[in-house]
Length: 217
Image (cartoon, rainbow, N blue to C red; front, side, top):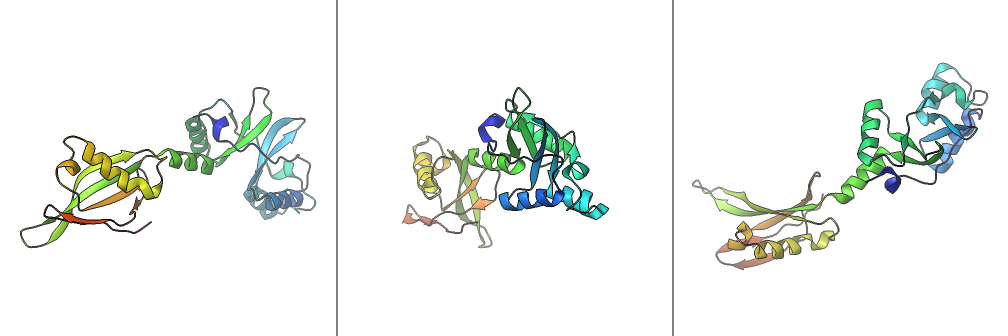
């Protein structure tokens, strides 16, 4: 996936000779935390709300007299529309930043990509994982759950439909644990996220206590 597919296209920019106070007002009004700094149509730096506080006010600059040029980060790290999302993430990790201006072939700013944009996009692409388990009574009479199989489903499937679809699919799969013995419950989660318990279901038969649980997290 390329940066151009997930970047923010409507980007507010600012000039280097604008007062810091006005830069702060622009960030507040647009609900953003950083602004690319443009001079003569070229990217010359980035300024963040933290820069205004740490490089500006904390250093004794009067935000109503000092300008963006005095507090911005010059030689800003940027990426291209043709970079992959993974390359953009690596740039952020290497330089300890959370935003990257996006440049076109003429080196003009055409977008902005943030770490939040990347992580949210990856989250949408993660498949659902449904784990089937059964209750087993041990020798001391203690009941515990034992995993009997997993099913992975497309992230396009709605959350409410994940467990029913997984149950049907598991029973159709030859030799799957759920096809030979009914599960006692299901637990669904995104592969790299915390577990998410879905809607309850309850059936009996075959000597198994089939019990579902509902708890969303």
